[in-house]
Image 1 (cartoon, one colour):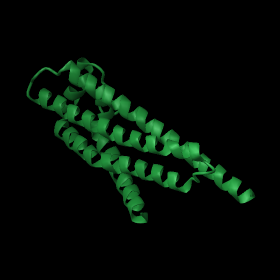
Image 2 (cartoon, rainbow, N blue to C red):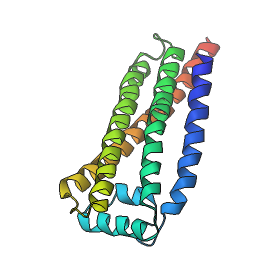
Image 3 (spheres, rainbow, N blue to C red):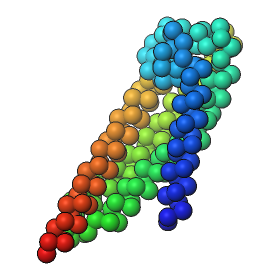
Length: 181
């Protein structure tokens, strides 16, 4: 169990650093947040401008590689969040903190669902790049899927992180209650 946690932390941090470093070359005037700009583009016109700005700088293949690296990141961050949720659940007493314990499983499920939305987002971003490179018009539905998937993913991750913080507060409070008895 200890090595699982260490592997997930190290893998998550290493891939997070690689993604942050790789994102720098995707930053343009049209994409001030690099790859995240495409995630939140919202319209075909904005997405097209972002892809055009990458094409002019010969960065479309780099964008494709960046998205593929994100596929590797998904199981690490989702796995880490699930691991932390289940670890905190295990550390919470069923008698002292039964309500808090019940929050752990939905939070873990939220992390997994966020990962699924991340996959959907990435597949559709790759589709946008393919369409652009083959001089095909970008599908508004695909841009919408990218934007909605990204937003949903981030909301689920936020929910998961807030729940983890609440679980840890419950764990500390439960420990204090049991030490005063």
